[in-house]
Image (cartoon, rainbow, N blue to C red; front, top):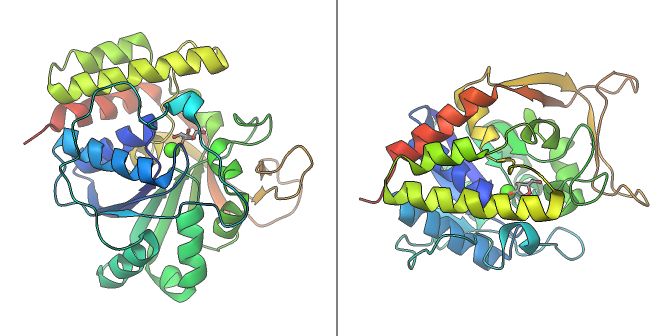
Length: 312
Ligand code: BDR
Ligand code: CA
């Protein structure tokens, strides 16, 4: 199995990525770090613990990370994920503990101790990852296997016409990551907007009939409501689990190697990922960029994950 650390801001779609990573035999889940994004870091951390509790995920350390971006003030997304960051189902009190270390210390300790390079899977703003790369560049160069992230877009944004939420929330951090020289895979909105959790998908999940399946169906139904109201989508895109899905099923997402730059100063375009798909800049490719997805295979993985997990 691939050793993985999830770095996330749950978040409805982040929650499903935790489930997929915990359930799939192709992943060795070494830990979960949380970051401010969809909600404050206090809330995203509580949500990670809630998800692990509901899914019976035990023994996976959860470490809280950065509360604000590298520069300036953060943004949250209550219009999409609710006041809790994970609105919809009724969750009980989290029964899994919080690791005492901050996310950067946890990343440092875990990468140093693990015998093989570790894959980092960020699905929120890139603050923790950038802070780690800046604090421990040598360790990162030798012990990070890959970075497989959800963020950006080859085309339009969602938080501004140009910028996707995770990149807009901390453009300086994204810039550090994309200029790090590490092996980076970016799966953005141009792909995730094809992965819509239709009523048929929600029914497949609900029909599994377990308490966890009920929670998951509630999450998807709530997410469908905000995506319908805010964006007029017929069904909500389940962005984040495309990362782990790609790791365990490499053919599921089609990638191209391309130069990606993060816009830091644009008057109307700060936070945009400028992807040179046509090679017109002559810049060296620095990321593998998702351009297509096998949607049916994706939903099979998600449904299987929910089927596999459950409270002890
Ligand atoms: C990204 O933003 C968040 O709201 C989602 O969890 C996802 O990571 C999509 O733009
Ligand atoms: Ca997210």
